[in-house]
Amino acid sequence: MQSNVQNAVTDPAATSCTLTRSFGGMGGDPFTRRPIDEVGLRGSKYVDQITINTHPHGDYGGDSVGSMSLGVDEYISEVTVCSGDLIDYFELVTNKGNRLRAGTPNPGFQQLSGICVLAIGGRAGKYVDGLDIMYVRNYQPSTVVESNAKFVLRYTAPGTKMTQYTESSTKTVDAFESVTTSMLNQKYSASVEGEYYVKATASTALEIERTDTETIKHELVRELKTATTTEIEIGQGQVGLLMVQGTIMRGADGTHWMYPTSLPNYPVISTSDLSAVLGCYDLTGTLAVQMSGLQDGHASDRYGYRYYSGTAR
Image 1 (cartoon, one colour):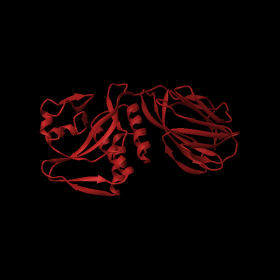
Image 2 (cartoon, rainbow, N blue to C red):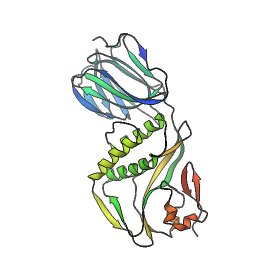
Image 3 (cartoon, helix red, strand yellow):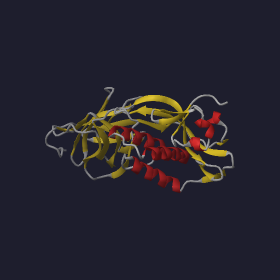
C-alpha cells in the first residue's frame, strides 16, 4: 500500500506545544489513547498489531518484533510512520536509543523527532488501520527535586463535615483533583503540562482529551460526582486533612510542580498537634489559619510551596 504522503517530512522547529497527529485510515474499531509504559508490535507487509500496556489492538498476522518497556526517565522521542488506508510501517525510538519497528517502509514517510510521546490511540481490525499520537514538540524534561515528600492537599475546618472517598481508585482521583486545583493559577510550559497529564491519566486510568489543567480538573471532578463517599464530622479544636506522599519536579523553565505517588489518607487531628504536619508541604498555603501554632517560626517557602519545619514543643 502506498503512503498518503509523497515526500519525507519532519515536524518543524517551533515553540514547545502539545499536538495530536493522525495517521492512516478510518477502518477498524477505535481504541483509546493511552500513555505508554510498554509497547509491542507485529507486522510484515503492514503493521498487523500494536500492543499498548499489554492490551493488543489488531490481529495476530505478521511476525512479532517484540516489545519495549520504558525505563525510568525514558520516553519515546521519535516516531516514523508510513501510511495510507492502513499503517504500513511504524517505528519508535526512545531518548535512551531503544528502538522498535514493524511493517514495510516506503519513501513517503512522516517523522516526528525532538518530541515526547504522551499517548497513543487509533483504529484497528485485521490490521492497524490508524494511529493517533499525542506528543509534546520540542520537549524539555523536568528533573526530580524531592521524592517521598509529604503533602497536605486539603483541610476541613472545625464544625464542618469532611468528605472521604471510600474506594482506592477514587481516592487517587481525589488526590489528583486537589493537586490540579492548586495548579490552575500557575502558567506551565507544554512540557510540564504533558508530563503532569501522563501522571494523572496513568494513575487514575481516566480518558482525558487535552493536557491543560482546566480540562484535567473537569474530568477528575466529573469522575468524583458518582463516587461513593462517607462524611466525617470535624469537631471543635480539630481539623480534617487530605494527605499524600508525592514527588516534586522542576521544569526546564524553573517552575516547580508535584504529583501524588501514594494513596491519600484522611486523618482528623487536633489543631494543636503540630507533629502531624511538620515536615509537610501545604498545597493550600493556609493551614496555619486552622493550626495557629504553625505561625510560630515553622512556616517557610520551599520550591514555591508553604513548608512546615522544626519540632513540636
